[in-house]
Length: 316
Image 1: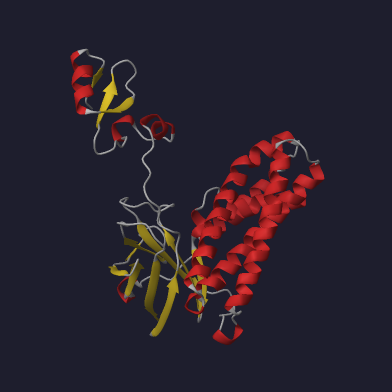
Image 2: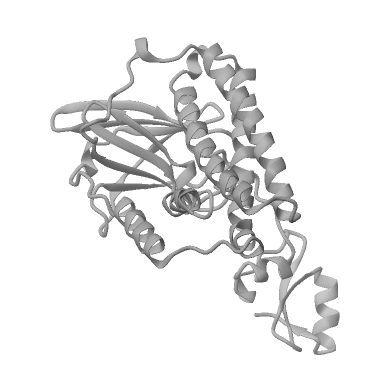
């Protein structure tokens, strides 16, 4: 039961989606800085923003110096070892979903999942600090496998409740309340306010640099937001320069990869919670409302005219 509680706490802190997990954190001097996307995954052509949370570093946190960093080859070896553990974990997850595991093995699997994700996050942070020492092939390989691990992590989270039910595993109210409190404390950690005019930062995407204009969030001190709409897919780099108490803090961050926007069907969009009148259609089609149920459809202009004439559909 304790192992399961640890896993659930991990899910609460890092989120049931990719959100928090995709944010990158570094301790620089006396400060901890976390950078990520406001909306994840970031999609080409969709309005988004880069968020920066700046807090005082914990007393036991240590800034990694160049001499303390692992070699690029060592990081690659560690990453390959994590991939092997990940493959084994996914096999165990499949067995659990098929009902071919016992309760003790399931709890152990969930604990291993939590531990593996923590190790993977650490490797990715080390990888980011050493990209100038790695070949482009190594960078591309690690980013690709990172994305696959993230997606598998999301799938395991989606299957979480089903596995609990299948194997009769119950969570105590005490554990749930305690973990909710921990997650809330994590989300509302007080940041360093008043740095809005102290940023000189930019984002680089496929060799193109764009300046970032950060504004402090009115409801959460220490959280700074810069609007940015990606116009192409790729791996962005955020170069952050901010002056805190007359000290210049500078670092590069690698937030989640920007993906091409894939247009889904009107039905799929509505199942995701999008209102019928806000459904997106491809450029060669127009959006209409079915008179029978008000649902959205995307049709060609010639078809639209026929549907209008027969009163089968109308424009929003």
